[in-house]
Image 1 (spheres, rainbow, N blue to C red):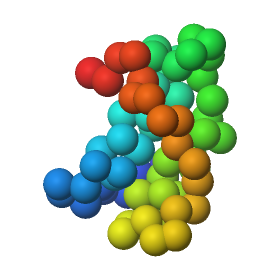
Image 2 (cartoon, one colour; image 1 turned 30 degrees about the vertical axis):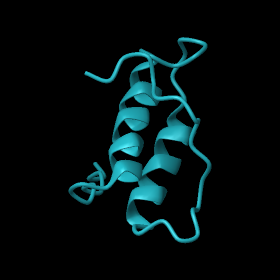
Image 3 (cartoon, helix red, strand yellow; image 1 turned 90 degrees about the vertical axis):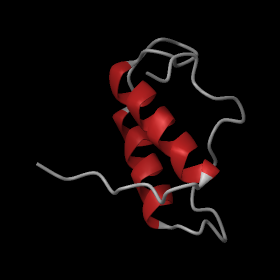
Image 4 (cartoon, rainbow, N blue to C red; image 1 turned 120 degrees about the horizontal axis):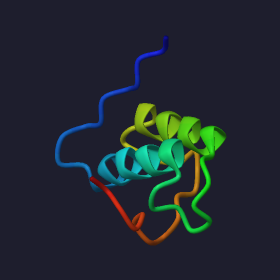
Length: 68
């Protein structure tokens, strides 16, 4: 079992990555409604890359439909 990286507090990019990671793992809130574990892993890479200069992955510009 791999532990997810913790987002940096008060970082919008990290917070977006956490929301997208959850959406990609569950399929809830993604545009097509499907899971995408590769994209979820990309979110972990971006969180680990904080402070995101340069960004490693391109996140969608809109937040996932469901973030809770």
